[in-house]
Each structure stands twice: as structure tokens, then as C-alpha cells.
Length: 274
Image 1 (tube, helix red, strand yellow):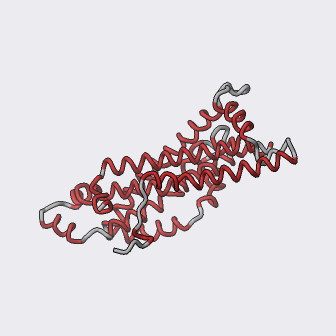
Image 2 (tube, one colour):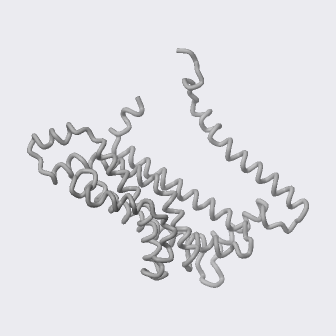
Image 3 (cartoon, helix red, strand yellow):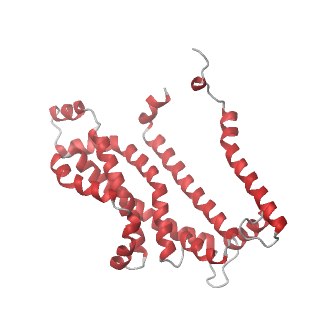
């Protein structure tokens, strides 16, 4: 077979090198731009220097806050992760229950599919004022925003994947005498769990977006709250590390879910690795 570009493969060193190259390029571009701005104005706040980042990170990640006594980065992270985890848990549970029901049971599909389809088209951020009015400014409205934002997508995704199941599986299960409940629990759900984890991975980005938006408007602690609080002072030396930390958390969550999926459902990857 000719060595066309699409048939060439990289070794591990090549993969690591090419993967790191864009990040190193971005860091070099930032360092160059920051050096130019500080050469003209030593007090520039738009592109802080590396030293300013180190000072800011030490201030928020190690030293206790003078007003609250908390270490801000960890207190904000704990509050945001608690809200996010609760929202993802509720959304995933609803996604599994409604997705399986609409994908497998014609009566439920006829009754709920139009509602889920319309709900998935509603911009969740437009509902934020309504959620604050109905549920108040506390934790509940933030969790509900995450649930409303991602659960319709998970329901539709799972229902579509169930409809793609070979009909022979369902026919064979019925000929073996399985009831509808047993078909759900022994045939459908085991095959849908890895797909649900994939859907959860794809929902992490939107879930963080909804959380940060809600915290920016009404919160007293949280990563989104802190970013929008310090923006008043053009504190880019705090904002950029916070954004990098949020990205790191999201990346680690995605990595954990992917590893969990591969470990719990290795059969799903057999054909892909061939």
C-alpha cells in the first residue's frame, strides 16, 4: 500500500511532540506580547508577566483570605464542583430514565419526544432570570440551570442510540420469554451505560458554561463568581490562572470518565482498536 499521508502513523514521541507544540507556541506568543507591552508600560495589567502570575497564584492558592480566612482557590473550587456534581448527577439520571423510555417504548416516545425536542431548543441562559425568580438566588437555581441545559441533549442522544439497536436483539429477547422490564434491565441498559458516559463527557463543556454564568450573576463563592468579581480591577493575573484551573478540572473529569468507560466496558473498544 502506498505511503499516503492518511496511512502514516506517529510513534509515541511524535504524538507527544505534536501535542505539546501548539501549547508551547501559545506560551511563546503570550510571553513575547507581554514583554512588548511591559517594555512600553511597566504597570500594564492586560498581559501580566510570569512573576505576576506566580504572586497571584500564591495569594489565592496558599495564603488565607484576610476577610473570610479561607484559601480562595480551594474554597471556590469546592463550591463549584459541588454544584456541578449535583447538576450532572441529576441530569444523568434523568437522561437515562427518559432516554431509555422514549427510545424503547412507543407510547412514551409519542408522548415525550416532542416535549424533549422543544426543550432542547430553548436557550438555557434565557431561562436564568426565571430560575432565579422561581427558585431564588441560592444553590438550587444553579443546579437546575445545569440540569435544564444538558439533560435534554442526553435524553435525545440516548433515545437515538437505542433506536439504532439491532431489532433482532429485542425479538430474540422476547422469544426467550423476557418481560419488558427484563429487556430494559438486561439488554438495553447494559449497552447504553457506556453511551451515557460518552454523552456525559460531551456535556461537560456546556455544564461548566452554565455553572460559571450562574455564579457570575448570583453567588458569594465559586470559580465563576471570583472571575467576575476581580474583573472589576482588571486582575488578569488572577483571571487567567482561574480559567486555566477550570480547563484543567474539565480535562481531568473528561479523562476520568474516559478511563472509567474503557475499564468498565472494554467490549465497546474491541472493534475500534482493530
